[in-house]
Amino acid sequence: MREFEAEELKSYLESIDEPPLLLDVRQPWEYAICKLNDSVLMPMSTVPAKLGQLDKNKETVVICHHGVRSRRVAYFLEQAGFSNVINLRGGVAGWARDVDTDMATY
Image 1: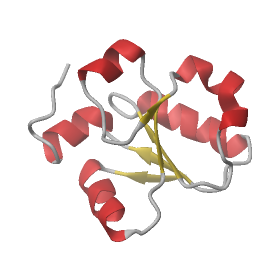
Image 2: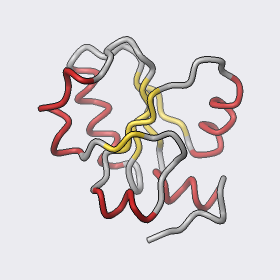
Image 3: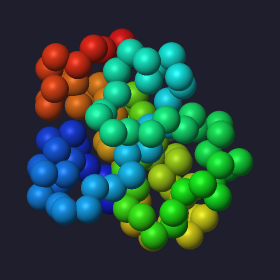
Image 4: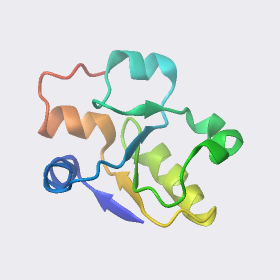
């Protein structure tokens, strides 16, 4: 799995033509506070049951609050045969600190 810090991910997203799936694995209450645009909420505990809803070949960026849950889910996805997974190291907290300083934090 690849891991990007927030600024690296921002630059990467700006440089590619095909946007990846931004998979947010936090809880709904966290997602309601702040989120990356165009992200999709799938709480960590639901990922195994919803695995069939995801495209194994689509580039997938996994996001959480600080990057710990997302790293676990990214690893799980790789073990399930996903070929192109990126973990957002530092999570939305890092994104709010380094990329979007107007983003709400918690």
